[in-house]
Amino acid sequence: MIVDTARARSRAPTVHAEAGLHALQTLLNCYCRELAFREGHASFGSPFEQNDWPLALKAALLGGPALHLVLPHAKARLVAAVDRPLPLARLRLRSALFVRTEGRAWAPLDWREFAALLLRELSLREGVPVNDELSTQIGDSVETVAAILTQRSRPPEAGDPLALYAESEQALLVGHSFHPAPKSRQGFSEEDRRLYSPELRVRFPLRWFAVRRDRLLQRSLLSSSADAAVAAHAPVEVGPEWALVPTHPWQGRHALGQPAVRRAIEQGAIRDLGPLGPEYIPTSSLRTLFHPTNPFFFKLSLHVRITNCLRKNAHYELDGAVEVTRLWREIQPRFAEAFPDLRVLEEPAFLTVDLPEAAADGRTAVNETFGLILRDGVQGIAAEGAAPLLAAALFADIDAGVQRACDLCRDIALRERMSYAAAAEAWFAAYVERLAPPVLHALFAHGVVFEPHLQNTLVAVRDGWPSQIVLRDFEGVKLIEGRFDRAAIAHLSPRAREALSYDEQRGWSRVAYCLFVNQIGEAVECLAAGDHALGERLWRILHHELKRYQAHYGSAGSRERLAEFLAGAPLPAKTNLLGRVAKQADRLFGYAPLANPFVQEPASWM
Image (tube, rainbow, N blue to C red):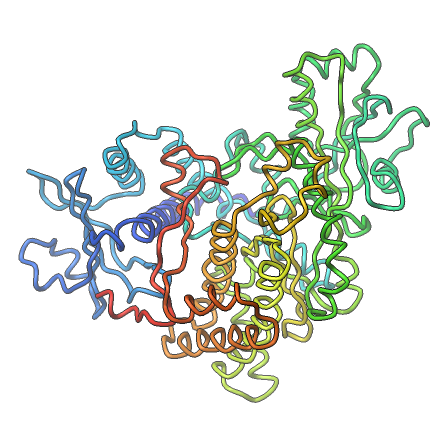
């Protein structure tokens, strides 16, 4: 990684301000989407009609609206100049955010003050103590973004499909636009950020352990055992009585801090081999690692709280991933006939370390520390001449404000002598045709709930056009209760069975949020690039695709759900802010109703 340290030092105050502004805007968007719009506490208008609004705000307006926000429990009013509101409730600030509380004059708010005020409002509203942990995570996220913007290396030269894939995984500089702490990494020190943050285009060797075979727990649907698949791409060999277990280097240090592991090392059941072998590339999840010559991703445990959760692989998650792969393989041949342009990266094997002689809590901690899932690689897609690009990198702002999908459409427009708008419409049509129908069919025809959000989806791009959709991460895949024979998963633990199950409503909400809000909604806003008429035409393309799906593959269940959606029923927006305020597990997060872009014009909010 090449970093200009003098330039980085000179930019430090600027990037901290930039990171803080992003945090403020993200918190504002979370609060408005999840609460303020639906409860009537946000409105739009002209500050020139308000005698008491700050003069500095009036000076900032250039023909756009002003947002007026009321925090009723904290007894505060906030105003800011904003761009015209976008569908799906996204706001973009064009001025500072000003606040007025009882007995005080208007004053600008920085991100720290706004976060404190907002968390106070929510604690009073919910009748719970202020969530200091979330406040810390917001600050940690800001520091991470500032470090990324300061230390990020120069972009690499254009490469082969696998190099383009790796670059896309490491392109997300600021993270989720509707999460209160999108880049929080509690557990990482400043040095850890520098060494292990994918956004800094880092690579590093794994830390390897040799484990006696009688201390290994594994399952495989492959033609070989999980440890044999790992050993085939390990940098060293060990005797037949041993198995090799890789860890993320941070997790390797964490493992050595556990008393049960230290005792196992002293007793000769585990050997610490240290960092060895080739450098792996961390993907956007931080803990799933890629190497171009290894046919499997290593999805490793990482005891770091990233956004909401400690990213450890509990035993029920290991078992669940392989079980979903087994069930998916029963469906996949029929599925592939109807949807040949969908690929699913299976997770066919796992391994971990088991120390039966340890106390129960120590034994569980060791299981979770060494948990490893093998996930299918993307080399086959690249060998076919397509670059599998992370969807989040296609539609998010990356270096210098570039949005990659827009660049692809501009290149197509130039090459094929069409307007940008025509290229964007054709590109979007090809993309939603490959994405929406198979995800919906998995749900409605087979009871399989994929989580097709931006970081779980790859778009295979050939000559600039979407040629395939690739779905991944079986941790998020669920099964609709009553749609699968319970006897088929009776061998799993009760915890694993529970983790795999959703009822019909939760399954639909999860798919509708991930597919229509988190992914396609972001794609529309990216490709429309501020052209509201183009955005409306893109939504109409999706409308046509959903009607076509129903005509070709639909069922009574899909007819009811899609008819409600196309008629204007609210979309579900995941309540990331409210869920974190309540300290809920991610699985229990609720959904706020969101104005449907098929029938709701942004101007009608104003």
